[in-house]
Image 1 (cartoon, helix red, strand yellow):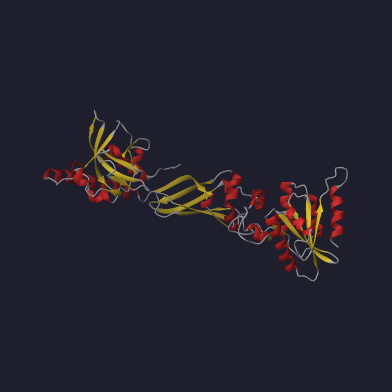
Image 2 (spheres, rainbow, N blue to C red):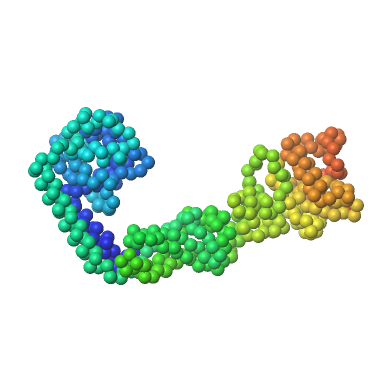
Length: 449
């Protein structure tokens, strides 16, 4: 909403009304359709140009300022003359109305050198083939008429400039609302910034909407905020005070940005975490176990935006997905995992967790999938370094990835694979009459000595 209105816009409106009275119009050519208004158009083939003789540039819209010369009511044919091949002010186009039907458009007095610059292809012989469409040698009468029109334009221009200059010192206050795509906003520590251009200003304005909870790292997860609010854009309200082209003051606010609180941030963090279970398989050779930083980096071009620990990620997945082996996961991560080591994650063949367990006689690497029926354990000699154990685990999981869990277990049982460790599988009990977790835990404890 504009309080005092725009003086310049008002002057342009007066100018456009004057042009309409003078039979001056704008036509728009888009994809070789000629538009008289935003709704009404005719094909380029319905002109006095031979079929296929010219084509306007397809990737941009071309505007032409034309003078209406003659209208044939019987043929519904309109004759026009282009008076400006590159108009800078196209506001007149949106104010035009089609008063009579037009089935054919006839161009007269075209300037070939100016027209060619607007075309993507054309026949070089076109002026000779359609001489009635192109300008002829000017007569004294033509020159006189052109001078009269030119003098009229100069007088109008001077009048507009005079009115604008008289009002240049007036202060104008504008109250505006505009939408910004989340993808176009920049997140910083403590605020969100947006750069916006306005027609009444020569330079863009950089708006800042403050919110102490915002962090620059959120630039990487803007799509999640957009998903939370279920819209691609957010609205900014501003009051701008200007004097001519000079900005005296401005302010801004956005309800959506102001409303981003810890609850919303936690929701974004949780949804982003859940997406790690949906990371698509990469057929290229790669590692098979990942830390929190490594697995989160696969979601976008950032890494651990919310500084989540591996345990925090695991607990988020348990809370959101309620897997059948939730008790096993909580037990392994809380009671058994070596605190000095990071829980690691697997993506393929299935999403799961790698725990490091230090027993009395051996070190153990435990693989527990999300929502699985069994726990895989590889037991290593304590003399092997953790790094070598991780490397061997990578090899084992990669083998499972290639041949499948069932075949891998069969190969181990028949000693067809040398894994340099002791492999065990602890199945989760399906008994309905006993505490299945207790049964699993007793079996597990007996294996990890």
